[in-house]
Length: 73
Image 1 (spheres, rainbow, N blue to C red):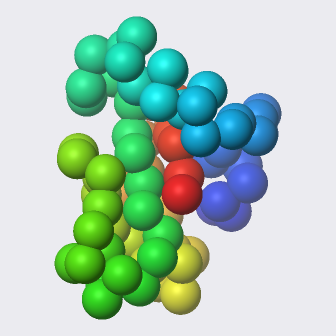
Image 2 (cartoon, rainbow, N blue to C red):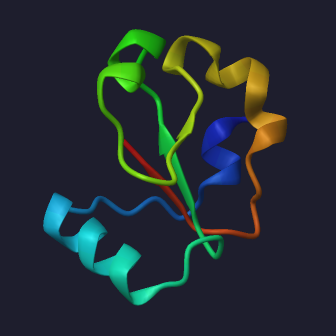
């Protein structure tokens, strides 16, 4: 399965829109996915974010839940 198939339909969000979405939805009802590299994640990341570096994403698609909205940054 391809990443795009898991995440259809794709919608771009501005940071303020993503923040509002996360404030209005209970943690666990969506996936916050950080696709930066490990060092960047360790320096700072959003609370509740799951790290899957972009370079490893295609090998870890099984970690995504197609039933949950996913916010990727």
